[in-house]
Figure 1 (cartoon, one colour):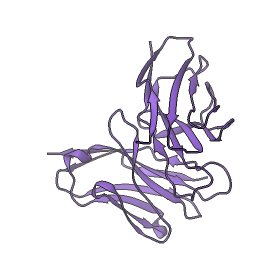
Figure 2: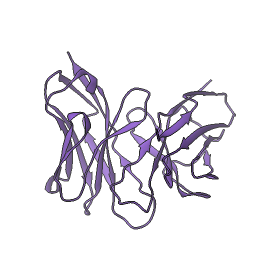
Figure 3: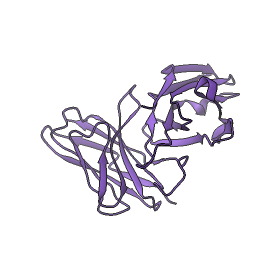
Figure 4: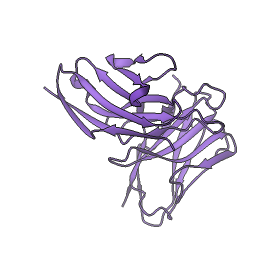
Length: 116
Length: 116
């Protein structure tokens, strides 16, 4: 079974500091990976998605993620945090299994706080 | 603009009542999904549908029912059998099986259900 683990349910950074949100997946087969952001009382918005062959993926709002097969990780980073980045972030995985709808399994989320 | 509309934004239910949450999409997507979100637990799949007149149970289908009579619509009914219905409910859609597996799901802005 596929699963995804987000280390750290809460992360705090100062404005202008590096943002690092961790995501590890468990799968013997390379999965399809996504990062979503959720602002309070809103739905999820896609930040970026992993495409086979590209280990560094760039997304919206200055975020990027690096796929490391050897570490089964897909950590999300941003060089300089803005106050507007405060939100909850979800990592999601979809296995390339046959048939079925494109189901996603979500991590439990990481709440990012940006301190002035 | 294309998107997913969930209504109402807030919903209150009395004990023993069934309530129906609306989800409409104009993205021409084949697949639609319902998730439940509780604090610290990420998103859990309730039901999904790959095509009109077909739907499948997700991980936590007990106490819920759905229908898919039109491609654009996927309403969710929270029945009185659902003992703990207070949660944030999110509807999503995706292109479906015709698309590559790295195609993301698109989300509505959610409905917050509370018990009176």
